[in-house]
Amino acid sequence: MRRSSLSVSFFLLHILLLSCILLTPSHSSDGEGDGDGDGDLVDQICRKTPFYDLCSSILHSNPLAPKTDPKGMALIMVNDIQANATDTLSYIEELIKQTSDEQLEQQLAFCAESYIPVVKYILPQAADAISQGRFGFASYCIVDAQKEVNACDKKFSASSQSPLSDRNDIMQKLVDVASAIVKLLLNG
Image (cartoon, rainbow, N blue to C red):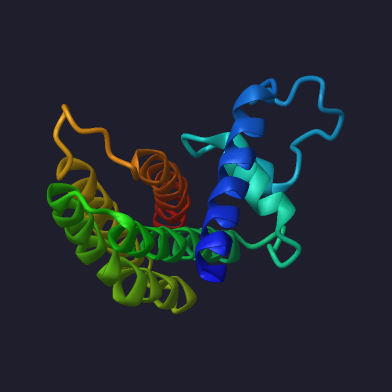
């Protein structure tokens, strides 16, 4: 039960963070009015991602985030995806234990089977690839993780709402940000 409450707490923290980001006014991407010229590298990199506020919030709030190293920023994002995916997998396992609906149990089991390789193999390989400067392979791994999450989403029909839709949506946004940062590294 303690693990379940930790999973819920971690998920609620992500939802709260995402809500705060989406409800705050967007930052100007042209640099006007910010008073610091080019701004810091985190802001410059995050402006090149599809979710600037999410990227900036994660990188600025992480005390270990290197403020001058794009490779380190990519690694922080992949590690955040890893933490989110691990939490989601734990949540799926709890839902499987609690449901009496056979169809839902099968759908959740499919999602667990989709998340297991993401947590155990794909994202750790992406992190290793980034650390080794193999950005092409890292990009491939991140896209592969995205495909697994999408497969989970597709397992639920339009008539049955997925209990994972919010979590998968956050995963999608995190993957999009990490993917954009890795592509920047690929392009030099």
